[in-house]
Length: 67
Image (cartoon, rainbow, N blue to C red; front, side, top):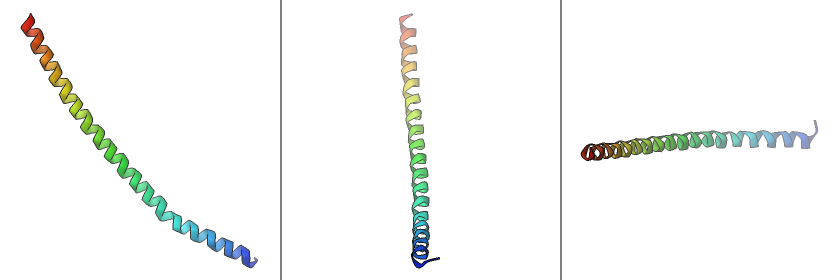
């Protein structure tokens, strides 16, 4: 092999080794964002269900009064 080929291979290998931590940290950050989004959605759904149940109870009371 010639010297430029060896230097190119070494540079490519070093760049690949330097990129691995970036990909791993990206995966971890993405997983954390997804988890936070899921938790937020669950909180929103819980609050939405509470509001819906409260509204239904008020509707039932109003219907019973008007019978």
